[in-house]
Length: 545
Ligand code: VG1
Ligand code: CO
Image (cartoon, rainbow, N blue to C red; front, side):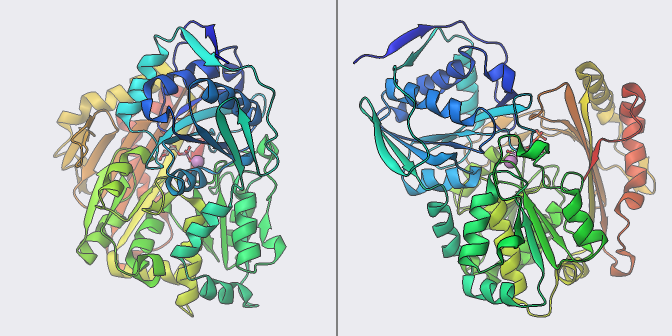
């Protein structure tokens, strides 16, 4: 049987951002919209023909429908085999693990991560390549160019498949294997961590811990790993049922959106350890009794203590962080005598370094951390890593691990201020004001600090020499401080401006918990340079992390 060729005209704006194509559900539901993007992937990725495609998503509204469409198109485009998570579920790190374990040529991950779901929420689609990681810019550019020329898509007529049972089905010549979404991922984690030690920690009556899946994809993963495999009580995993609208919340693990967990653990000090993950399971928030771990610090602490964990006992090849992420990881790398790299925002920039064996751990300030075990950030991996450290360091707590770390390496105070859904013109003008001033800033003072460099971050990939420009404005005061400004590439409404503030304090006697007060001069400087608050009429940021 030959496939149907359906004529379409190109849609504007099918350009993948920081992490795939993200739009409102109603945009994705326009006839031919999803199809145009998917066909552009198939047209540009010749490896997929005769190969294996992994397919799954975070379970949000439109996930199941999109999977049925993509399967019919995949068959019509000559893909030999599709691996689909049961119920259409695959967390982002699990999709990466499945691609790698089964030698697939690529995968389509359906998610808009922490963006709200439901009929009025967001949807997204991301293409991952054969290494299991997000497609690099060269690939997303090629896909985008194709979307501007697309004239037809290919599809078979076929009834919807049953995705709710592990099974082998066929669409004409293509085999569709519905797989357990957790098996490969859980098996991989077991090779990295000391499950015996974590089990003993979790069994201790004085260790109170909780994981919040935020009604998103990590529910089934956390139940398998933490409850079934590690013996946690069933009620230690909360909001474990993935919902199409995430229960109406932002599945974003940070103090603003995981407010109850933050209150109970940090403000009321009632739990020893708490963690949460986002819509698609790649982010993590780590909390301890009376303390929140800044994601930049988390990367640094994991790197400094990695050899205590079986999967990293041999040491690290190097570490990498995205440019806005604090330089705490660099301090650890210098201390350990290993390489450190600074990449643009977005996980796709870590892929080459990981593939080349130049780094073992990497992370972003946006609650993302992971290692060479997959090619995505991995929320539950970070949770297991912290549990493993606590398990093999008796007497230590999250707070004591952090204070010991700061005493040794110094503390990088850090905060990100987000101005969401700002008028795109106002946001662009605010950043342009700062951009125009960059050449004149070195030598100027911010409080008592002197600006040493100021630039628009450009990156040359050390492995393939590809160049990415315009990756964020940064004003640097030597090792002491940085102020960074960039536009989000994941939003679906207006423009989101992110301002990042970092301040270094070497003296343990002065390392108090007063982040916002410490960075206040940097915040004033950012407003002075951009005029963002004044121009947008906002009193302050919408979200502070
Ligand atoms: C944000 C974060 C970035 C992260 C990206 C995808 O991008 O800042 O660090 O890689 O989201 O994460 P942006 O362009 O909005 O700043 V996820 O968990 O949304 O896949
Ligand atoms: Co995510």
